[in-house]
Length: 328
Figure 1 (cartoon, rainbow, N blue to C red):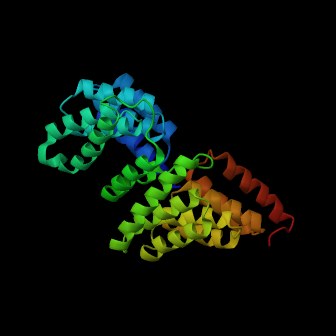
Figure 2 (figure 1 turned 30 degrees about the horizontal axis):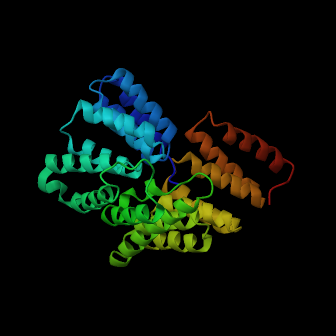
Figure 3 (figure 1 turned 180 degrees about the vertical axis):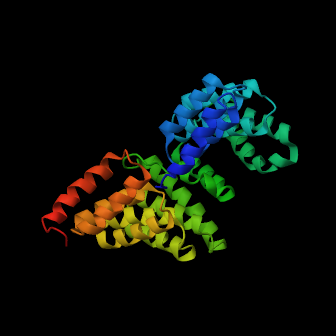
């Protein structure tokens, strides 16, 4: 999981408070929170913008993307359709609506939206032609009737693989993070992996591709393979803090707290302002019995956020323990 930059969040929120009527500030905050994996906070930020900022089309579009990315297609489509209603000539609004409709199994509606997007953008949308042809074939197979159920996993997986090959940045949004993946999700994860692996073969110096491969392997329960991919990303870019924290989680799952602590120290050195990394390191060191260094990690967390209850508790508990001679 990518760790949060609290300083950046504070800066973005301050800008929103200073000019609450500007929709682009709410959109920037919401998009940034969404990329950081804070979907609930992202929705709250965008919904607040809808109540105070004008014009709201961009916010409806972004909120739709957040809902759809979390699997709530009904809510996502409602907001994305509202965005298109407000600004019907925006290519990106119509294109993303088409993608969401296709993911929700509304093939006929997706085809119509794709045609509209291609008409709006002309040559810029030429790469949508292959997806339009797939949709048109699917509609023809059903006699022109819109599908009312999601496409079967093999078809959806094929579409996902093509999308990720063309735009690998969408891979993380397609990786479910809650609970164990079902059979359909596992098929989709394998499709994402095939696409990322093909891209990594052609672009072996791109660490983000290995980061994505690690996330996929983790969700599939393949921890050894996930660690291998995360370490590959770090060998390419030793300053990749997100990959460090991913490796921390993976080493913990494999029962190697010392390796996890090693990578966590690296993460705190790379991103000293990430409170989550200091707290994680404090927990790891505390579990190993390294109380003095654990206390120092909690103190650094308190320097970032004086109201952090976990950091306060850690400092107090470890101060007592070390005073009694409990340091290892």
